[in-house]
Length: 99
Image 1 (cartoon, one colour):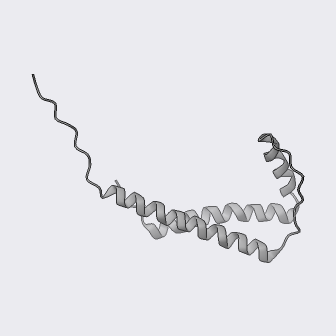
Image 2 (spheres, rainbow, N blue to C red):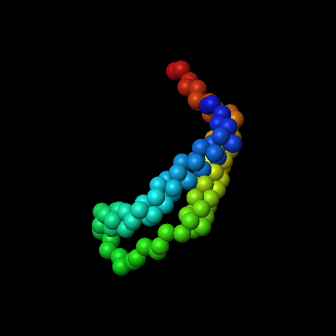
């Protein structure tokens, strides 16, 4: 198995998860988030009474920072486990006796 660079995996997964939430922030800032949430909840047969809070740049920065960090952590753990499993000896197939 090919090894994965843990640092690059951490940055990659962190960037993807952070970018996903950056898109969410844009939806909140433009007022489109509630419409999308209503649609997604309806697809899951859920009806909730909720309201969207006003956009806050500090909260937005915290969301991206937190989700990037969590994504980076899981990317790092994934790469370490992948590399560890790749170093394990392959199981040998049992030899069949010829009769």
